[in-house]
Image (spheres, rainbow over the protein chains, first blue to last red):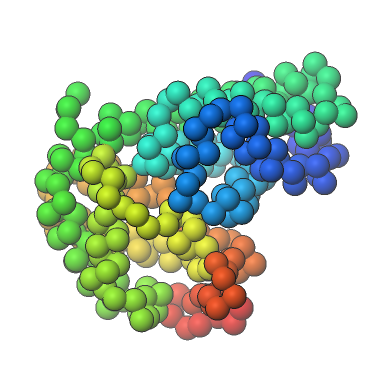
Length: 141
Length: 146
């Protein structure tokens, strides 16, 4: 992983109030820009889903320094998402939605450096989830 | 590369039913874990777990219940509770499945749900509605005040 942990945590901590809007922004962007994605959550209480998503992002930011723990957490998330029926195509959709989400959250400080660092983190998150998913995908589909 | 999904390689629904019968027999007899199932019909919970794992392992997606995180949101389940449960699950699987690779795959999938079920604080629990009670027990099965 190539991201700068201190830089990411500093931007996060300097914008704590705005980071609480991440899950709101993320699902707004996802559902508006990618038709049909809302159907994936038809049996889900979105209030709860957003809370869980927010908790997951908080967990990732708080554990950027513990790569062993973080990698296990993300790989297990990848495994769960295969169980939920999430196929690889959705990773691209989530990647773009996450990039737009962080751009919106950090819009006041969205420099080339900020963009680069958050993009690196998003890539790491999704690549690690995909690694976990690929460990089980052939067994589950 | 095996073309059959894990559900089929395990022997299908019959294996899952047998394992979950043994698993919940042990849970309902366990002082640490049985308290979480007070008033819950064992056959119902066995069937739900079988439906859920059938879907998770690549079988027909007949599970219509809540996602695990939502279903357990009001329960203060700790890593220690989960570990105890995991030991009993492993024991039950090993009674009916004798292929170590398949056993480990099953356990790996089950373990992946730990992060969304376990909580580090009772404050992380949430009631689904006003009448729902927050459930919290220590490892002796004693109720913890919420």
